Length: 82
Image (cartoon, rainbow, N blue to C red; front, top):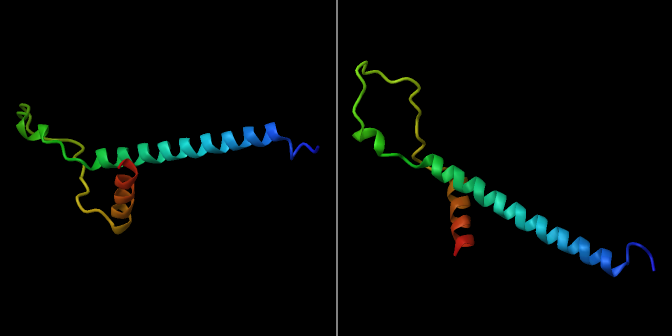
């Protein structure tokens, strides 16, 4: 029997491919979750008192509107969760 046709080798290869696909899905989910968390607005800043100097450095803009592609990806992710 050839090396390519070896049953044990095919089984190991199949297991490896399944594991790799699972890891890729998890990686993609983590990436999407990080994007979602980045888009969230934190309300704690409004309640905090300003310091004595009264100026702010490094103000970051928050993206409020999702593009069509981002909406589709979010919908797809929600389907995967359910």
